[in-house]
Image (tube, rainbow, N blue to C red; front, side, top):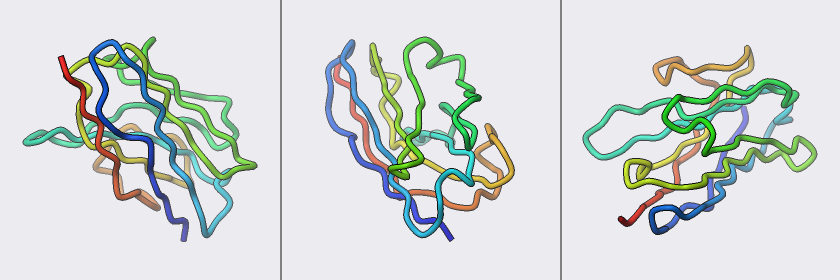
Length: 124
């Protein structure tokens, strides 16, 4: 079983940038497609971005496309989410998740692992 730990959240002004990290242990991260999801207060968890196990394929939600970049370093067992031009509506708890059978964009899918989340706050 893979364990995931997110980091890098914090408070940023609108227009600013943050980079989130998701560190894996227990299994080789390259065996998993990885995704970032987020959940704002009183809202359902939503898909943000995903990347295939070898890093060759990426998928983004329309709301973050061209602003966020997902990447991975399998040698470091870490996945990243670079977030640029942040908007107040990007504020949420961000979670990373892993799935052995490919990219998943539906947060209701039973993933192989979820992290505990990292809070991103964007001030206007």
